[in-house]
Image (cartoon, rainbow, N blue to C red; front, side, top):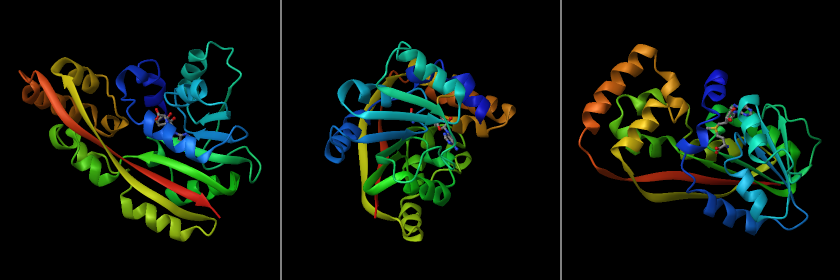
Amino acid sequence: MKDYFVSISSKYDDLRGKEILPPLCNTLERLTNKDSKVLDVACGTGLFLIPIATKFDLELFGSDLSLGMLKTAYKKTGNNNHKVRFLGADVHNLPFPDKYFDVLISTNAIHHFDLVKSLKECARVLKKGGSYVVFSRFREQNDRSFWGKNFPNFAVKENRLYDREEFVDAAEKIEELDLDNINELRFEKQATEEEILAEATNKKYSTFELYTEEEFKESLNSFKNWLKGRKNIHFTSEIGEVIFKRI
Ligand SMILES: C[S@@+](CC[C@H](N)C(=O)[O-])C[C@H]1O[C@@H](n2cnc3c(N)ncnc32)[C@H](O)[C@@H]1O
């Protein structure tokens, strides 16, 4: 999967939707003040962290396991943005002292982590009363998504996503964290046949890396046949917002 993020890093931003930025900003507005220290764990190319840096006056950090993704993030800041400090780090072993941050965020990434282990580590670096804000597609949302319904085997291959209940159970296992809120967000979207095809052929999601080369080729061919002639495609995109509170 490491190689996938190196290969996708330069085209990642063009392929991914940014609709969660407004709700993420609303949550940050509620949970932060001008003195807050915020870390985006698995910030990738800074798709959300960089717009946050332009909108909020916060002390911002972005960490990620993939140096390829971080390089793209750093380039986007023009190499002179002092507002965000990027660093290579595994979420399961964050190079920060205990109780360092007021807020942690993580978007579209937690399915790459060991849920309980990463939550424990995130709880460690959070101040008491701080929050960990997670945006992640729940497994059940993925199953009924445009890709889950229409791209052959997409829902079966994507075996990493957590369902709503797993977040509830994980919070119960971790003494230092309470589940503060779970929200399900829906966005109405539309795309052309060409845009959808480009997303599939460029492997917009890491899920496509879970196919063998042969399986992917076969699935892509039958998806192309299904897609042919569909001009404007309307669909609903869903995601979960889970907020943990450090107690
Ligand atoms: C789909 S991208 C999401 C990036 C960004 N948060 C966004 O919403 O655009 C998933 C990111 O998780 C990172 N990642 C995967 N496992 C990780 C780990 N154990 N620690 C830190 N980052 C990790 C990958 O390198 C990748 O950049």
